[in-house]
Amino acid sequence: MDQSSQIVQYILSGLSNGAIYALIGFGFAIIYNATGIINFAQGEFLIVGAMTAVSLARVVPLPVAIALAVLITALLGGLVELIFIRRVREASVLRLIVITIGISIVMREAMLHIWDEKVRALPFFTGTDVSTISILGAHISPQALWVLGVCAVIVTGLTLFYRYTLMGRAMRACADDRMAARLCGINARWMVTLSFMLSAGIGAMAGCVISPLTQTQYDMGAPLAIKGFTVAILGGLGNSFAAVAAGLLLGLLEAFTVSQFASAYKEAVSIVVLLLILVFRPSGLFTRSDIGNLRAH
Image (tube, rainbow, N blue to C red; front, side, top):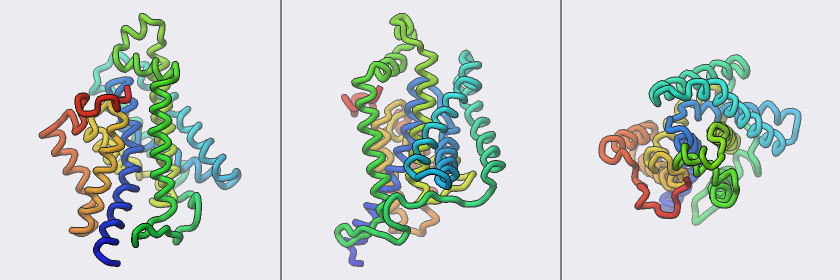
């Protein structure tokens, strides 16, 4: 493979990984908009979705298994909000964040008991694990194209949902000014519950689409959550769509780090980026003035 093909290979790899991080970052941004807290259980929702789909795929067709896994995980997200978040709605943000960390630990231990320590994976949506598509001399798995496609569909779907549906507009109103939304007759508590369900469902979809590539184990949620949190911070917390650009940027940074250094340094990239953003630009790279009409809600 010549140098130009290698560059294309790293770009494709970075974009596919970045799309994964963007999908996780969506969840952080959606819940932050609704509640002002960081949901550190987001990574566990991703793994629950993937594991549930793996189990269901044994008895039903793969598309049905994925759809049911997303639905079940979304309902779980709503249940978490009803049981743990709503009951302490007057608590400080720090207390709520600690609660989400506790939820992530409980979910991780529950997954260990349900699915044990075995590594599982969904079958490739198209092709096999050795199938590749050639692009400008580089090779990419068809599943990576599924990741990019699902990311694009979710971005488009969220755009249409927030701009053109009554429920989406109600969620935007609650995010902008909850008290004013209540005075207009919007049930703010239900909007928060819906945001947890939407976030969990997106996380489950992300888990399903990446499972054939990365495989899935009960304790993979925390590392992925760190990547998603970095993307959410990098894009500017509360901005769902800037998470796309931030995720792709992080994926490309990781890919070119691997091209210059040992692959072991890849995992350090997100931590370094997170620290730099928190120190030098805590508002993120994409502020409101930067993104204009791309602001989600």
